[in-house]
Image (cartoon, rainbow, N blue to C red):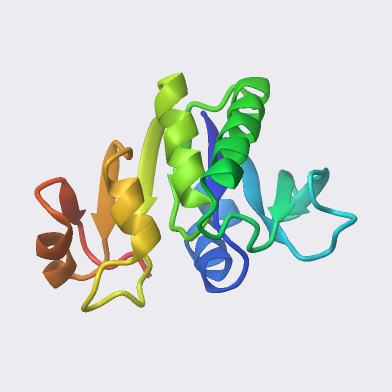
Amino acid sequence: MKIALIASQGGHLGQIHIIFTKKVLEKNDVILITEHQDAKKQGTFEEKTFLGKYRTYYFEKDRLRFNPFDYLSAIIRLRKIFKKERIKCIVTNGAQLSIPAVIAGKLLGVKTIFIDTVIRVKTPDWSARASYFFSDIFLVQHPSMAKKYGKRARYEGGIL
């Protein structure tokens, strides 16, 4: 299966690296979409950078903020990447890139999975709240958080 892993730089990307090891991904074809602060890498992709095997696409770090036009631009760009790569499943754990990713996936009929970050134990995350409405599967890592998001949020056990 062709899977796109999407995570913002920092802790979210660190969690993706912990969850999706070579052993977990060995039967699938995967791409990683993340942010990078180096202006030369933004808007580019590199071969074999994620786990030494998988392609990585870069977006500008902290570009989206709260500008709806930037989100629309990101949705269009992600849609092109998903079509080009023939993505069948999107997995994201936030932050900023998760919202346009699940929307772009929904527009293309791609299965989308959102995994709420492990550090959220009391209050919902803003990117998770927005992604909740567009994701096919919405997983939380603490039982109490399922009630905070709504009926579609599921606790299947701690992932990390």
